[in-house]
Picture 1 (cartoon, rainbow, N blue to C red):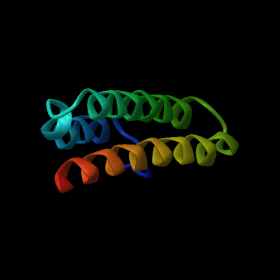
Picture 2 (tube, rainbow, N blue to C red; picture 1 turned 180 degrees about the vertical axis):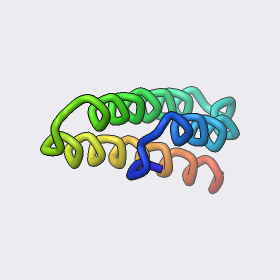
Picture 3 (cartoon, rainbow, N blue to C red; picture 1 turned 90 degrees about the vertical axis):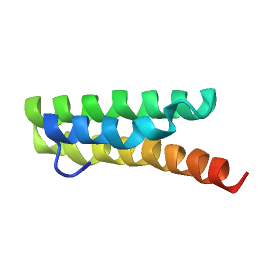
Picture 4 (cartoon, rainbow, N blue to C red; picture 1 turned 45 degrees about the vertical axis):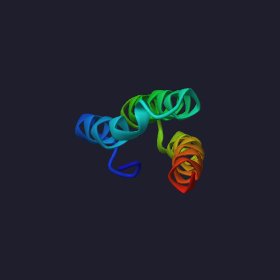
Length: 77
């Protein structure tokens, strides 16, 4: 999804992540952070030169890994 960068990808990410949102405030915040960065990535990819694409994607991947860590920890408890 991060490499696709389209409005549909944001909607898909929301649908996938909404299943975890009510589980914990920490997870909800991580999901909100990821979605904000993902929307920023979409804007950057559509509005700027290519030199900004990889750093924006890296930021989105970092935020997504945070969501993964929290949801994995939640599933283990």
